[in-house]
Image (cartoon, rainbow, N blue to C red; front, side, top):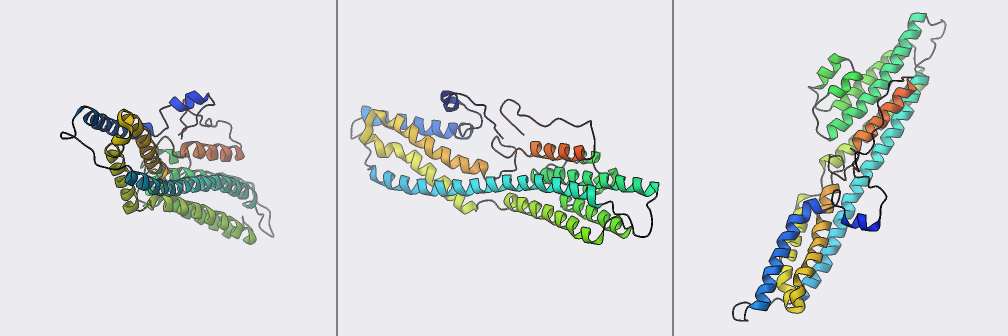
Length: 320
């Protein structure tokens, strides 16, 4: 995600990366070149050789309707982007709460006896293992949403045999959650978790699953193709036809008018495409690496670890 530094208004106007220009520059250049040709033909050639009979009124009516459709589509795309950000904000809070619960509720002394030194060490080890599994779930969710098949990041938090087994899983975050639930159940059978606390831990797992499902819904359900295709086609026809509709009215200023109008419509059309899928690696997609690292550092600090990776900072103005 682009994190622009505070600067002057002029710097914001002329910036390139993170804007719509990398995606629209060739389309705009094509329309501008066509407008120059049409303008030359209108001014330099006779009416017998070239004459545009298009009236600007249809472009006015279509432009008004098109702006409404583009606004609706961009609002829909932004809602998806913002919902994705809220889900990952919820993931940050849920993992923090779940780690706290694991470190405080997985410690119940069985009734009628005192825990041995070995059992106390086993409980501490289990607490650390469960917290690390929450970190592994976070990284696995990020990798799944970005369709990254490299699971080497999980080796620091899961046993090697489990990481190998995950390679065969179609839903790796879900498999990690199932393993966590199995360990919680085993701890309950040993009396290390009070029966009333099992439901609390289970609810945290349910919340993690709900967040995962909501993220997968956004990723796997794009805006309907027929709607997106219709918008793209209308924008293309409108912008490439515009020079023929305005040249008789604005004359030599046609290329400038077409440049401004096509920049606006192509830009609005492109913004919706870029933010529709918020979990990718585009300049304006969500910084999942940064949020995953934040969760990892927060939870490992709760375990008392000191040798922690640094929180991710923007490289230039880009935060991954």
